[in-house]
Image 1 (tube, rainbow, N blue to C red):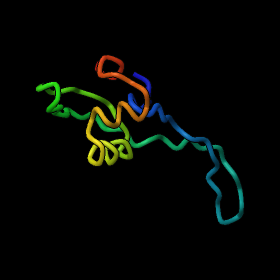
Image 2: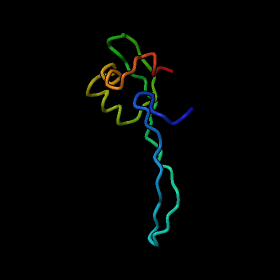
Image 3: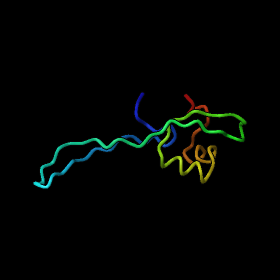
Image 4: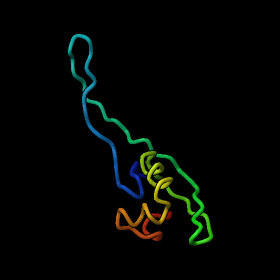
Length: 80
């Protein structure tokens, strides 16, 4: 399973770890993904998704279907 948010599609970022001596070593910063079981009142059922914590804040604000609409997705696109 890839580490990708099922709604926003964010993945890892690449960068460097920098020591006090200014040595740079390549590093991959993983996205903060959580597996969640969300209740969707409009559908009357639970949906299991793997989303980033940033999208969880968006879901709190807009609702699950509102967050999907913002990213141009449907429920069938994000369910496992």
